[in-house]
Image 1: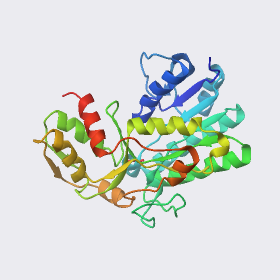
Image 2: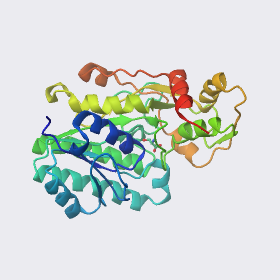
Image 3: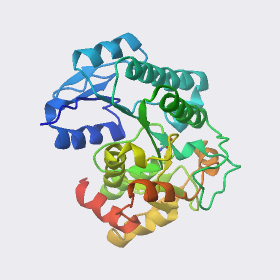
Image 4: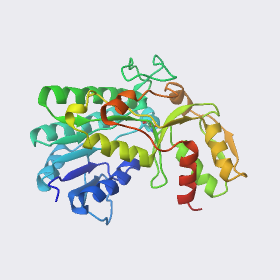
Amino acid sequence: MTTERILIVGAGGQIGSVLTDALRQNYGNDHVIASDMRDLGAQAGPTEVLNALDGNALDHLVQKWKITQIYHLAAILSATGEKDPMWAWNINMSSLFNVLETARNRNIRKVYYPSSIAVFGESADRDLTPQTEVLIPATVYGISKVAGENWAHYYFHRYGLDVRSLRYPGIIGYQSMPGGGTTDYAVDIYHYAVRKEAYTCFLSENTRLPMLYMDDAIRATLELMDAPAEKLTVRTSYNLAGMSFTPAEIAASIQKVLPGFQISYAPDFRQAIADSWPGAIDDSAARADWGWAPRYDLDAMTHDMLSHLHP
Ligand code: SER
């Protein structure tokens, strides 16, 4: 029987909701406390309403549930962040500081904090961005993740807090919807396809971005968190890759299964964000340190998505 008690902050989000289920499978329903600023309703395990900007409330929950690990998934993503940069900065950084300070003060064993491909900017190598790249992001979301990675690194070296992090690419899954990101089209497109509706993409047809299937993203997260601490050489955030494709290529993958599917393109402000990001990233440090390997390519993902989604 595990003694771990895990708090998920942002458990109502695209990744947090799926991660909650996966952690409950592994640790038992009552060992995983799902928190979000919205009421999560009845679930298989405990839930709490938590505004991550309220450090006292977070501290209270950690004591109440005798928490040993925190997964901090709450954030304002790239596209939404550009609408109000100071608001996004405040939410992303204040919530992280609350998690790091509570973790330090309450002797939390491990913290998970996701970073993103958004840390890279136009100065980065776009074809296979290395782990140690110059980080000059184009979005406030990216700036907050660069800062957050460095704070994770700082808390590890200064206080010995075991913070672990992955630079997620765009995450695609049937279980949940993304919100406010630049890679969201790659989830939306499948929902249109199963409804037999044409899709208008907000990125141009040849915009290549790194992406990852949800199953792989969850497995990567659990594998990183289970890895022996001494194996981890990266204490900012690991590059994590799965596949890379363009809107035209995902449409072609869908058309192999649904030949009538149609796509058109109407790029909006998110095009500039996508253009500042790499097309593919080099995750050899993750592979070497903790054995990362993705399982899904584009067509395997398409088959799985289309078999789970219903009109
Ligand atoms: N999916 C995220 C976004 O588009 C990238 O981290 O903002």
